[in-house]
Length: 369
Ligand SMILES: C[S@@+](CC[C@H](N)C(=O)[O-])C[C@H]1O[C@@H](n2cnc3c(N)ncnc32)[C@H](O)[C@@H]1O
Image 1 (cartoon, rainbow, N blue to C red):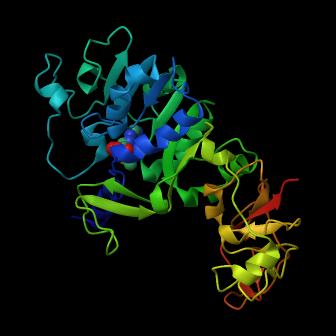
Image 2 (cartoon, rainbow, N blue to C red):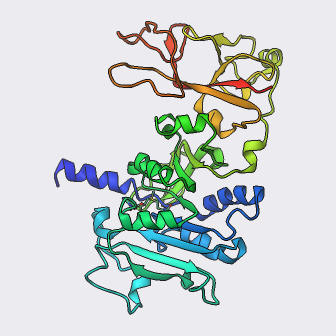
C-alpha cells in the first residue's frame, strides 16, 4: 500500500467516529429543558447519519412523537465514497427490502425519512422509510443541499476532516443547528467573529470536556483509567449551536480579586497577582474559575471559558491571537497586541505575551454592568 493510500485511509477512519446515544440525549435535553417545544413541528436533517450506525437517527426516531417533530430526514454517505479498506456489509435496511439494488448499494447514499405521512403505528427506527439517493450522499451535493434547505434544524457529528466546509455549508443556509466539533475550531476565522457577536455559541457540552466516540478502528486511544472498550476518547470536543439553552444563562460564580489572591486553588494566583500582558492593556486570567468578579477592565481567558460563557455576565471583546502578516490577514473580531520579541522566535509576536513568554490564544472579555 502506498503511503498516500495509508494516509487517506487513516484520515477517512478518523471520520468514522460515532456519537453515543447518552451524549446526544444529554445535549438535546439542554435545549428541551430551556424550551420544551424547541423541536415541535420542525423538520430535522441529520446529514451524515446512517441509521445502522447513527444514534442521532435512533434518538430522534424514538422521540419523534414526544418532540412533536414534523419530519426527520437522515442521509448516509456511500460505502465507496468513504474509501475505507473494510469489506462491504449490506445494511439491515437493504437485506430484507424489495428496494435493494445491487448497482446502487455501494455507490449511492441513502435517505431515511420519518414523517407524519409515512409514520406507522410503531414510532421508532423500524418505521423509517428508506431509498437510495441519486448521488453518494455528500453533504455538498445539490441533492443534499436541497434537503438542507427544506430543514429547520441540522443536527449531526459531521466528518472531522471537512469541519470548516460543513460549518460554511450550514451558515450559508442560515438554518438552526446543533453539531459536534473540536474546540480548536473556535479560532477558525469563519467561526470566532460569530462567537464574538453571539450569533453562534457552545452547547451544554460533554462531561469533563472530552467525548468517548464509538470507533471500530481504534480501541487503545483512551488515557489510562478512562478506557472504554471499542471507544476512542477525544478531549476538547464541544457542541456548536445557534439554539438557546439554560447553561448560557447561568452566571459563573466567582470571587473578588482580593479573595482569589487569598484563597484561589490555583497556585499561580494564590499569594500571587494577576499578570498584565507585555503587549496589551489587560490582565491574564489563566483559569476561568479565577476570573475576578470585581475587575472592570479587560481580561484574557483561555478559550475553554466559552463552555461557561454567559452573554449577560460578560461581553467578548475579541480573540487575542498572533498575527503573522505573511500568512494571515487581520480579521474582524481578532485583536493583536504590540509586536514584541519573544525568546523562542526570531520574528516579532503579536499574540498574548506575559513576562516575555508567548501564551496560547486568549479570549478577551469584560464584565457587563
Ligand atoms: C464523525 S462521523 C459521525 C457519524 C454520525 N453523525 C454520528 O455521530 O454517529 C461522520 C460521518 O460522515 C461521513 N462523511 C464523510 N464525508 C462525508 C461527506 N462529504 N458527506 C456526507 N457524509 C460524509 C463519514 O463517513 C462518517 O460516517
